[in-house]
Length: 94
Image (cartoon, rainbow, N blue to C red; front, top):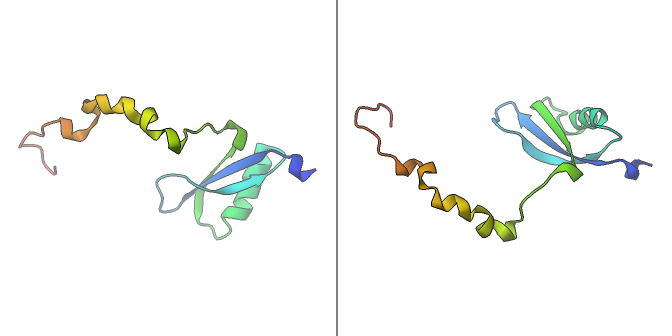
């Protein structure tokens, strides 16, 4: 029965972290139970401040093999890069 449960990906934000990091996967009957199980399995030492659980089937990802054609369109938008702009002399801390 347990292997019929959906697979969830678990992301934890640590106390000193600014972003969530993928820490593993688990199976659970629903999202609420996945969240509780993720807390028990991945934050036993109170190192987390936030947990996300996402059904694995809901994750859509690009392939590393397609990185060049996938990310190439951003190359022609040079205004997105900080080096495109001139910083005035009177701007402090730059």
